[in-house]
Image (tube, rainbow, N blue to C red; front, top):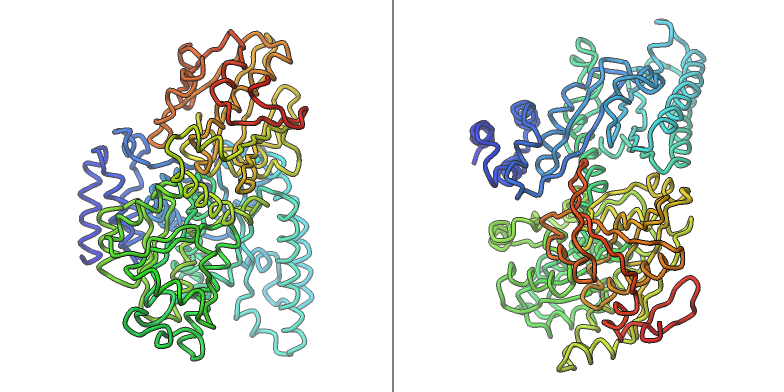
Length: 640
């Protein structure tokens, strides 16, 4: 389908946007647009679409986010690119774009439209005119250097004002030295001095943002390495004061979308890889281990580099799995015996190496790892396999490799599927934890009844108060957990820090150990203690890795016991249903709570009440769990 046809379909869909499934259709159409003008056109056509229209059926997975754009140059066009990019990934962007060159006023004035809009993400785009506009027309090097010093002082104050006024994300970019100004200096020492000064300026902005957990700096030079992306077009810069090219604005829109994904918990957890012509060249079943292309040649080294990249993602907490039409013995031989194989069998948390349809294998992988298919990225070289997965499992992100191994690495990483604001200690050990989970599944198959299996695990649940070291992990859990997330409240590190400093808010972290090892911090609870003596479980979250073992009941049992220690009279729990967490809609009722009406706010919450604070009956339901707490070394739940 040509891009003109896609635009026609987008226009037609716009007329019936409130129909069920429209947002998914829209995402599919927009994902097929590559021409810069088509993306702009689509974004413009959809400018008046509201979140309420897209979400009218209540069945869509679309999520809203507020994005503000401020700049020292004309960049209104970026709103169309942001809208298109976000809708491609089922994100509805409510966008505010400030007037030309109003960025300083927007940041410094506490009553500016920026703060009134209250965005989740503020994108502040800057180019070298922040220096040039303060200089005489016949400037010399000293004028440029003085202007940069002055701007650095002023803009740092403006950024600090933002961080003081808002705990939401501020995203800016490194400023690039344009070739016009560089060429105007005719001695090389001056050229070197100005280049060095630009690097110092960008380093200073980076350092200032490093001190703020709500600050992100995007490296403009990296975006300029994308194919066909230039800094600016001289005609647009000269006549329209649009100092970034349309292609570069589109790249910033994509980066903005990636940041939005991290805030909304839309990032991916699992990388599922094909083998033949993906992890090596050739077909191992036909060519044999000695005949595949891997290492020892220019092309073979590219495949080895791709394997190394996958392994590096695994080291950063991405779950690795295989989905290959092959004989398991052939692939195992490559990973264990080929001298240039970077990936080893132990690097994969699960393997589906068989002759079953790949979309069915993906379901099996998701079920085995206890994750949703929407958290999977599937990589394959086959058009047939990729199209089949796109058709039958549209929630899976598909990367169709080009067949040119030199392009494979960027094809995998450029979309930013796995991007995170910050990695925690838990992330670096996630792969090991999922491999341990596979061992638990093997153990489960040895038992004829679930009780015997659960007793055999020797489960120990450790409940502790959060501290400065674990707060980032708490924020991450609220952002990434979708299934056992009872109110779906997403919290930034700043939000969690603010709650942590509140004497009447208790943040609990949950670690789980068993005979296969530690699962690390897999859950948290946020509890508000009210003046009337009641406890309110603001949210309760648990990783899908540890479902169905009674751990969630142990957490509630601990909270009830803690409430009794604090002489609380009543404990309340809250639940807000989504398509992801609806299977836990009866959780509080199953643990002794009774329905107690609704709380209306931005999200309607179902409230549940527990007046009889009997934690012993809860612990009696899970005799295979040992509870550890901040006050106990190891207390059997049967002895509570």
